[in-house]
Image (cartoon, rainbow, N blue to C red):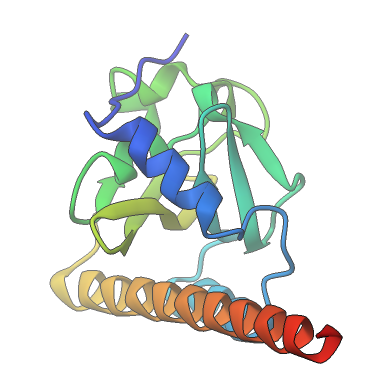
Length: 177
């Protein structure tokens, strides 16, 4: 069993994520574009936006994914959301905890992982992730900057989608009055 870090405010973080009403929604074309850019820029077979809650990691959008979600206990993004910067593992087999994840030991056989936290206010919702099935060299500072900036764009898009949903709800409520 993989052990992963949990922040002191994880319960509050999960409640915040749930209150955003983004779980199991359609990502929208802008988030799809960001993930497609990650796929092309970093030349990885798998790129995704993951949102982490109490028992699952839900993939808001992604390229190269076989499933819409994963059990949280297997999620490599747990390590990303515990920090404030990119979490990168050039070879997952060499990481003492991640090497135990079924995502590494079984299919898909992840060998490289990099995730930028999706910081919304004081909470990390999840991560913008880059995954490869072979080990890779660590990113250089230019690549890290690109991934950080793209993660900021993901959060901005999540904020915009939230505002649009709330506005549409208020408009619908006013129409029914």
